[in-house]
Amino acid sequence: MNQALLINQTKTTEVIALILKLHQKPMILNRLLKMLYFIDQLYLAQSNQSLTNDSFQIKSSGLIPKYSRKLIQQLKLAQTLTVPSTGSG
Image (cartoon, rainbow, N blue to C red; front, side, top):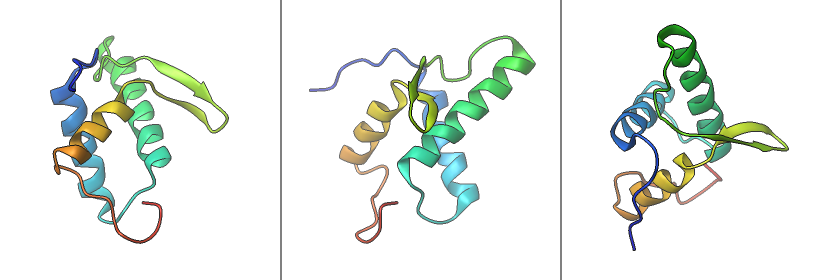
């Protein structure tokens, strides 16, 4: 069941694609989420608005986007993103 997420799905998907393209190898989900946080904060500082329109939650590893994880899960189910068969990327 696809729930409508409260974030800008188009921009968030574009940012995820750009991060993965620039990184050019499998990435751990937590690192991707942290990068999304930093990119969103940089965009907020420059344009006075959020790029992803996501809220953030505190984890032991730091602040991470709250709803982007669900978007990534939806992209995996739609086979837009793939998960490597080995490792935790």
